Amino acid sequence: MKEEVDEAAVFAAAATLGRSLVRRGWKVVTAESCTGGLIARALTETSGSSAWFERGFVTYGDVAKRELLGVDPELLVAHGAVSEAVALAMARGALGHSHSERALAVTGIAGPDGGTPAKPVGTVCFGWASVDGTWRTGTECFAGDRAQVRLQAAHHALGVALEQLRDAGPPGEAVDGPRAQD
Image 1 (cartoon, rainbow, N blue to C red):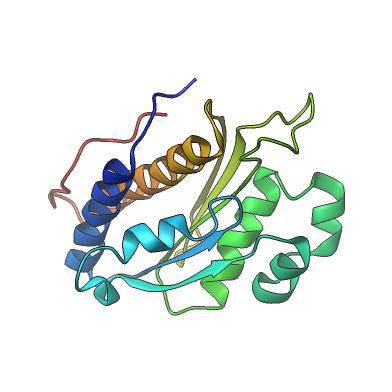
Image 2: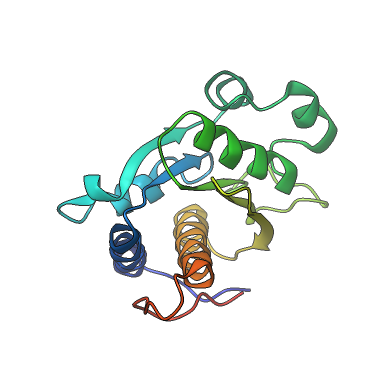
């Protein structure tokens, strides 16, 4: 179980990511399902965000994932929309349909309905991708109501994106903010 997150923490994480991106001259693109644009909203909360936020896709349904991001229908059938495979395909598709260096994608079950024993409410899958070909996926199960699951998912996605920028260098460049907790 993750700790509760408020909107201010999500906005702060987005601003920190933005500062790190702008220092590198990079932009980020988002592909969101269960967060419904919350991450894009957080990234654009700070004035000047066009310097680091290129665009966002809200692909709530499977058809949108296929049409806007190029997610393979067979991948959706084989793994389901809430899967690391689909999250990664969303991130890669967002990169391919943008001019960004980094992408993050989120797909999950925010509730209160839709959960199964295998994928309970609060299950969220993530994908992060970069134009250099590196990528990462992950799955978390967040507690709380629908709003809290979405806030925790957004905060986690932004935190891991920041962590990846730290790891990307260039060497010796400081990045603001605490590391994301996995």
